[in-house]
Length: 128
Image (cartoon, rainbow, N blue to C red; front, side, top):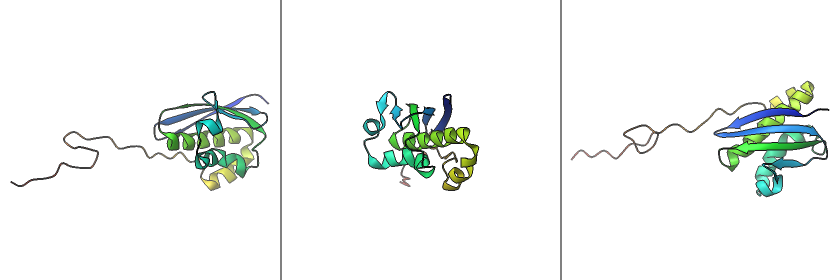
C-alpha cells in the first residue's frame, strides 16, 4: 500500500496527514503523540477514528499540524485521520459518518467589529 494523504481543519488549525501501513506510530511535527498532546483526553480524541474501526496498530501516521490551539489541532487531526481511512476503505465511511468524524466543524471565531471592544460586546453606555 502506498502513502495516503488527507487534510483536516478546525477553527484556524490545519492538519495534513500521511498514512501508510505500519506499527501504529503517530508522529506530529516530528514529535510523538504523547509528547505533543500530553493530555489523555486529546490523545483519545485523535485516536477515536482508529478505535472505532479497530485499526490502532495497523497504520503509521505522520502529521504536519499548523495554527490554532491544542483543542482545534486535535479535532483537525481527527478529521484528517478519518478522511484518510475512508480513502483506504470506502466501506468504513458509514460508521465514521455516524459518529460525526467526517463532518467539518465550520465554527470559527467571529471577527472584532470597529467601535466595539470585542465581536459582540459593546462599550458601556452612559446617558450622562
